[in-house]
Amino acid sequence: MTAAASAHLAVERRRDRSIVTRARSAAPLRLLAPASPGRAAWVYQSSLGGGFVGRDAVELAVDVAEGARLFLTSQASSKVYRRAVSRCRLDAAIGAGGALVVWPDPIACFAGASFDQHQRFRLARSARVIAVDAWTAGRVAHGECWAFGRLGLCTEIEIDGAPVLREAVVVAPAHGDLALRMGGARAFATIVIAGELFARAAQAAVQAIDRPLAARLPVAQPRMSASAWPWGAIVRVAASATEPLVAAIHEIIGGAVREVLGADPFARKW
Image (tube, rainbow, N blue to C red; front, side):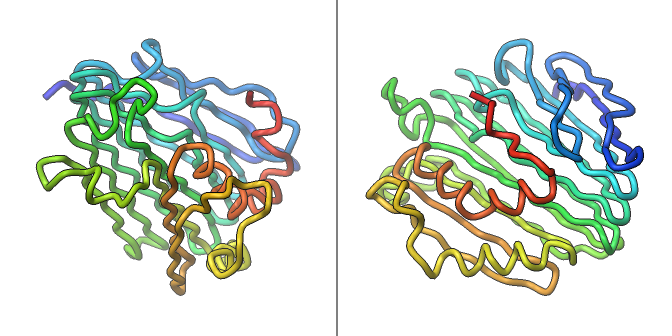
């Protein structure tokens, strides 16, 4: 197994703003930290090859200090190229009163690719996190629908050292024909909302599945399910394509994200 390239990102609060105090990365990962108009620091994960190739292995450690806020995202969809057998690990610690929003674009695995992702969030009691884990059937427009080898995703949450969640998904044709098993859906997302200060956002996310989404969404409404827990909520979304999936995610958590960041990070992304 190829040794992982280690990267480290640290964010601290200075007066009423959060700033990046450390951003060390190694190939293939690059960390880009542009100026942000809100209270939070914004960091984009980029790659020298535009995605994962070969046996790429990345480990990113994130420290969000007390009272700091961070928006961590990607430049574009996380592509896993043909025949790649790659992996990625994110280990984030969020201090008291801190907030972390992890919202990358969906993962797209090319034909024959395999990818494993592990995310671990360690929260202080008064910290909070929103994590979006989205993925698609692959390069559908190029005839590569469910043509990848394996996709494994795992998310863990700890609050004050106590584990409260271990969410894992493995998608592989070895378990059966994916096109038949997915019921027509080709884009999926799991949204995890955790922390006492996100209680209102968690409640709103759970309630969102009980009402029709905004009229601006496509006619084919995504399918959603949600579960509420003492520490937060989990929302799962399945859609026919990437566009309605992304629109549904924005409808569910967009307001909470703008509130905690003090600005809309997607207003000028494209």
